[in-house]
Image 1 (spheres, rainbow, N blue to C red):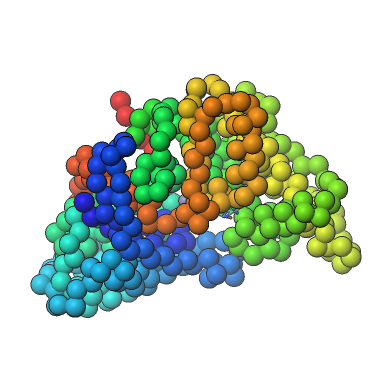
Image 2: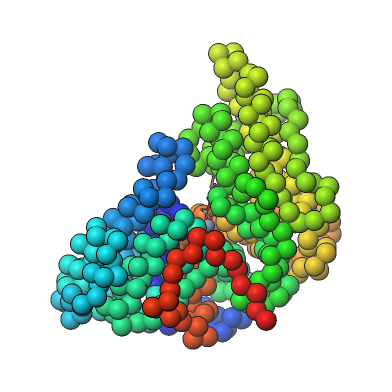
Length: 392
Ligand code: KG4
Ligand code: ZN
């Protein structure tokens, strides 16, 4: 089965094409036929964060070029004119995305329908205006090409991608505990089978990635802040700089699986405000602060994850979301599982696949398509606060 994946939930416009076969299990395998991604991070960096309406406009501009690139890579971009030209109704579906419509009509006129079975698109959670562009794009393609849509939960995409190894499912056992750490989410999710999820803990305020981004901003580092903080923190470790600050470890000892990161950010702000910026050694100050912050985040993430592994008897820990690209946090999680003598297997995607992409959406979408779980296109909506579902 060939699935086109479309992801526009935040600041990455991504389109890919996979070919996959088999049930969720050892027989499953897939090939990545084409993959295109355009990041808006540099644009949003000027403002220190992602602006939903700016993101929406950029997605509208980038989707047809990303689709073209992914299909070309997959050798599925025919040069014969399409028959599905200007189907009536496309202008209604894309009435809020005129820039996208303007590019899509000539695209459909110039290329005949590719041999694809379904479109998997992120319908939440994320920035709602951004999500709508992807959803409407999928609806337009579904109509033009006459193929169904699978609506994918972005967080399930992160989980499923983390479960892959060499274009197959890794050899792992449920129950799976997923630690999802991104710019918008910090969650511990328990899964006893594919498609069934129970939220066991979450942040009560800022997400982990958001905390990285906000702290980076406080010390004048560009957006996205995660990689920048991580770089400085690693320098502090390499240089063996002594610990100079003590940040709190919020909720570390509380008997639950929830997180809180806004107090940490406030504590960093206080330290920064009490620091005269003209003082020599500013670089060293930032390195030490970045390190203490990263340590604090890692301490809390690791402790809560280990507590949940014990409590729920997880056989596998899956880590996903942009913050899982962090080398130090990856290392700390692996070390903690090994130290505890816990046999739970750790699955983390390679750093380049930890941040948002379309492959994760196509993969999660494939399993739903395989079960014939298609969206009702008339009712399909973008949903910024979409939750992971619990199967009865
Ligand atoms: O999953 P993702 O790409 O998008 C969302 O769905 O939010 O995550 C983006 C977040 C940003 O907050 C970014 O700062 C953070 O992931 N991030 C990192 C690292 N790379 C990206 N945080 C810490 N360390 C990193 N190396
Ligand atoms: Zn994400």
